Amino acid sequence: MVETTRKTQVVVAGAGPVGAVAATWLAKQGIDVILAEAGADAAQDLRASTFHPPTLEMLSELGITDRLVEIGLKAPVYHWRDRASGETIAFDLSELSDMTQFPYRLQCEQYHLARMLSDGLAEMGPGKVLFDHRLAYFEQDETGVDVFLENPMGIEKVRAEYLIGADGASSIARKWLGIEFDGFTYPERFLTLSTDYPIEQAMKGVAYVNYVSDPDEWLVLLRVPKLWRVLVPAQESDPQTLLSDATKNAVFDRIMGDGAQVKTEHRTIYRVHQRVAKKFREGRVMLVGDAAHLNNPLGGFGMNSGIHDAVNLCQKLTSVLGGQGADAEEQLSRYDRQRRKVTYDFTQSQTIENMELMRGGQSDAHERRRDALRNVAADPALRRAYLLRQAMYESLDQAAAIE
Image (tube, rainbow, N blue to C red; front, side, top):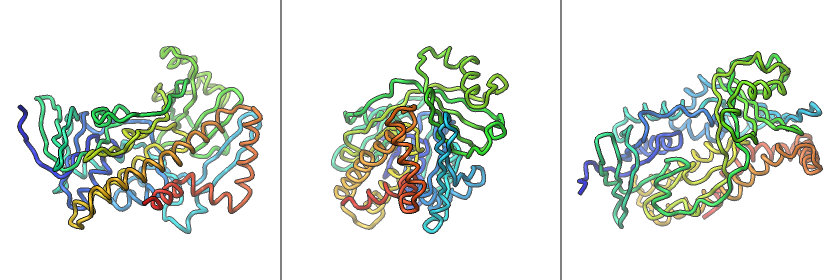
């Protein structure tokens, strides 16, 4: 029998940006929390890199936004580009400066946030970070959760009042709860190439964030502080071929005409999913971020929606654990209703719509979607509504309206 070695109010499994936000939010409210991470540190994940304005507002409450701004790139303008015609449709988040102090996307790799917060949490009284501690199993009852963490020396048992599963797409928390993860996986693989080559010199007028539609191959081209990053779909299934110089050259040939001169820092292949857990909460165990939902990267909603999950949940947990006397069942059930409905109604539908706009080639449907986007850009009222949706303010308003 494994003896209980620690007691805490909340265990957060997973020290990515979503788990780190959840743990830090709770610790700042004086709640005893353990952040448990399977890896030796907050891993250097190169995928998510866009922070939307309301996310920056939430992170500002944790005192971290200014530090991210120091190392990131402000991107108020983003482009939808038609590579065949050369047409560019621009949207400028500066139009929302009347409602936020952060009227821009911030381009900054997500691991910077995870590392800053986990480092800070280790120095906070009510917060602890346990690296090399993987969530292996848990058992819950009416008064709490026994959380079993595997470390290099064995299994440690922690008694907590609540467990937050922020342990990613392959979430152990979700699997032990037996919660279905419905949805689909896109048939194509996705290839990401990163380079310090000055693409802005070869592709005049390019923004920091660009969604490029094309009859043959759509792509996302965006800038992070030190690199340009290109995301393209790939029908080829052989990893060696996908990661080859020939493939790299062909991708950059279509961007700027001479791909051979471009040297890459990273080449990564991954699959993209659209999936949502049937429940975000079972008893005293809650799911957030990729453990609860996955979507394609177009629009930069994945990490941001996960952070919105974490803040929504931790506000409610604080009202339960922080001396306010709120009813746990009522608060946690509301978290599940709010974030699951928003995931279905906003994040999933919007990312699928963005993907269809990009991959439609020169079909009639593509032309209709492009005409609609032109009309939105030309109409101030429609454009503002579109910016509020793409910046994720609309999704937060939707959640707040759900009782």
